[in-house]
Structure formats: structure tokens, C-alpha cells
Image (tube, rainbow, N blue to C red; front, side, top):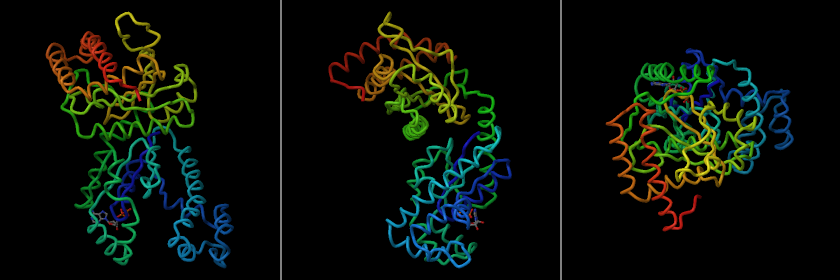
Length: 400
Ligand code: ADP
């Protein structure tokens, strides 16, 4: 089941996007609705609020008196944090329970205004941010939702900024035009990415690089995309405790290097065998990855080195819109070390970086089939390993 988070500032058009996704077949969970549910009369969360804030926050009818509670918590950050610590877990549990009921093959959408503020975005496979400039939002809230202008501006100011949301957005849907344009953008996202992604997850099929290797000029978003994958994989493996660190590696982690449009991420594991643990595999599957059983090692360097020190497990992402490779290597192993060294060496040595780019271009001109191209790069890597190792010694480089 694909998990999609939809967020955006109040009045941006978030609910419009969620409604359309529901029409297209997604199962939508509205965080605001769940937040209201968990404090209904008879809910244990309401009892806990009463215990903490006193009987005055519950009316004679047994229902939460929102006005009385707001008057207590809004001027007092500590009280607000206390309220969040009561309601937050209750909302989280209910959302998780509801999601667990969503059948395979159905996209699960979490419509959550505070997805960014609460750091919950890491648990979503994809985050869609709906964006409109503040004046447009104020106008909509006043004209269409009947809010007072000052109130609208206060609510907007209390939320994350557009920049904070953009930092975690996989997709930004601008909504300053007609509602029809927004709906069309949602339909396009659904057809080109969400529906095939869900199909891939059901089939256990990863997204593949094209048969013809396409090396592209460095993209401005590689860094941010890498950081998002790192955060998500880190969150997915947190409970297992096996990861020593997660890092963006490979060519897209080197500033200014042309590369195949693939995000490579390395997970350092305490012991290589940890990578095969059932809970680790389950966590990676849940994060949307598929194990590729036939890749169990990298090419050892120098030529003839112990293969056992170059062991790995390799997982591929299922997103049709972005190719992601995850390599699990034992912390401290030669393969683990080289992935980090290669990235840092090329990042610090522009002449080596440019020489590598030239070698890629030369090999592509000879044979652009991906498998042949990857194979043809190997001899260059043997020389590069030696030069990188010399560089590490010269500069006192450390892996982390
Ligand atoms: P959110 O859920 O982000 O607070 P909504 O989807 O409820 O925002 O949109 C806020 C208001 O603006 C709603 O009344 C909605 O009908 C309206 N609206 C949304 N998109 C547009 C648009 N492109 N043009 C005009 N009005 C819009």
C-alpha cells in the first residue's frame, strides 16, 4: 500500500486535492477529522484531557468545550505541548489502525495540515504539498470559508512556512489558478506516478533504469532528494537498531557531476547478517523497496581483494517517478568505506570529478546499453580506487 501525505497551509487547496484523490480511488484519512473523533465523549483521550486541564474544559453535555480549552492552551506553549502529548499519540494510533485496514492495491492518503511541523512526513512514501501565495489564501478563507481576515492571517502565521514545506515536498502542486487546473494536476500525478507505483508495490516490482543509460547534467534537486531518502530509510530502520548511519552516496551525491538520474543511498549495518534479519527486510518492504537477490557483492578493489569484504544487500525503490537504490553494507567493510570515500574524493577533487564525467561520456558513446556501460566503467574504477585511497592517506580522510 502506497502512503501519500498531502499537506499545505490553510486555504492552499489541500482538501480539494484530497477530495480528488478519493474520487480517483484513494482511501483518504483526514487528520482533522481523526483529531475530532479522539476527543468525543466516551473516548479515553477526553478523560485524560479532563484529568490534566480540569473539569471546566468539558461542558455539561459531556463534550469537549473547545473554547475553554483553547483559552487555556493557546497563550501557554507548555500547556499546548501537554495537550499535543495527549492527543498526538491517540491520533497516530487511530491513523495507523485505519491504514492497516486499507487493502493492497489501494493508495492510502493522509491529509494532514501539520505533516511537516510534526516530522511525520518521513513515514509517507510521497509528500504532496499544495501551495498558493498568502494573499490568495487569505482571500479564499475570507470569501469562501467566512473567516475573519485577522483570524485567517493568524492561522497562516502559526503554521510552517512555504520554504519549510518545500524542503520535504516530493511534489509541489501550485494552486493559484482555476480549481480545474489543480484537479488536472492531481489526475496527471495519479496516472503517471501514484497508480503505477501502487501496482509496482503489489507486484513487488522495482522501478528500473532505462535500458539505454542516460547520463544527465547535475540536477539542482539531487541533494534534497537524497536527503529525503536518507531520512525515510533512517526512520524505517530506527526500530530495528541495525543502522549505524544512512548516507547519500554515488554520483548524484557529488556536486557538479553529471550522472544517471538515480539516488543511491548506503545504510551502514553493524553486522552484514543484520541486513538479512526478518524485521529489517519487513521494514524496507514497508518503506517501499524490493530486494534484488542477485546482487550480493560489489567488485572488490584492488583487483583480487577479499570478496567477503565487499558484500552487500541491494534494494530498489518502486517509484516510477524516481529511481532509488539502497545498498546495505557492513560498517567498516571495504565496500562501505569506498562508497563514502568515492563521494568525498570526487567532491574535493574537481579535476578527478571532471575526468570521471569525461570517461562516462566516452563510454556512453561506445555503447549506451546500461548493463554494458556499467561493466565498461569497471577498469576506470580500479585506477580510481588507487587514486582515491592515496588521496585519503594524503589528506587524513575519515569515513564519517
Ligand atoms: P485547505 O484544505 O488547504 O485549507 P481548501 O481545499 O479547503 O484548503 O481550499 C480553501 C478554499 O478555497 C475552499 O473554499 C476551496 O473551495 C477554495 N479553493 C480551492 N482551490 C481554489 C482555486 N484554485 N480557486 C478558487 N478557490 C479555490
